[in-house]
Image 1 (cartoon, helix red, strand yellow):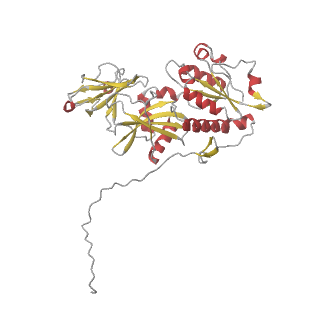
Image 2 (cartoon, one colour):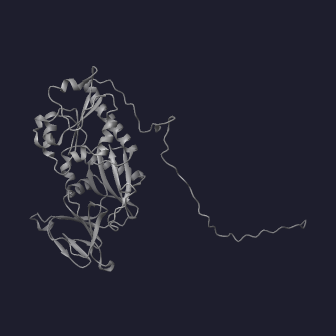
Length: 389
């Protein structure tokens, strides 16, 4: 199977030669992202599996071409996997998509909305996805109805909406991960300040109880969970993988295993949560999409949408993701490129895996039902009677 090296680009002269392999056409899948993402271990694992499809080859755009080359110089591809991260020129990717018209995996225009938490909440409200009760403080707005905040010891009023402590203060920019949670005076006051993981910490406590005085923020009710956050990862509207991690709001210490990786726990989603995952995927038009779910008081609430996200260290996820994407791409492009192809994979197929002694079914789950040993005495008495009556 032909494969372009990471960072290579197709020249105009080699396009035709590379496009056909042994007389059969190939679907070129382009990966357009910053190197930190496109060369990450999860991406490499998925691309390796994607290339197991007979008619698919992958091509990773080099960061230099993405940042410095004109879109006319970008490689020609049939399918484009492009997603925003810090420093990525999203506008150029949109321009390229309009110029070349490849099959797009994750909608590019909607990635602007994902960068603004205000737009994210607005979209979810429109689609009927449950979100925390919130109010938006737009300090960059001239409308006084959008930029009024009154602060008291144990609550704030944002544009007339009251939030009792504990409450959460989020920057409107999704790129800003400095999220503060404020405690009531009955709990000692102060605030917990969350941030992107630095070493073994993801938050610190501060004695400062006053809200921030500059910038625009979303204020929302604090949702009391069981101390974990649920991370959900979709691959299309019908597939969702979920994991739980220790909430950074607890004590700020990141749980890591013996290899130094953050500890994640498998999570089984309810039918309602699977429907939420489907709605998020379709609402933001992001085939590969991650979002955060809070389970509180019997409710499942979406508090953040992260866009293009991969699960780390899950070979089962890598297999499923590559198969779903490969089938999706070929289903869309095989007819127009006259490629003879039939769907070879269904998610309901038995999980067969290779072993040293051949192939066997993979054990996915063990369910144990355990009953406690403490029993209440039934106050019974046994009496042996020998009298004939």
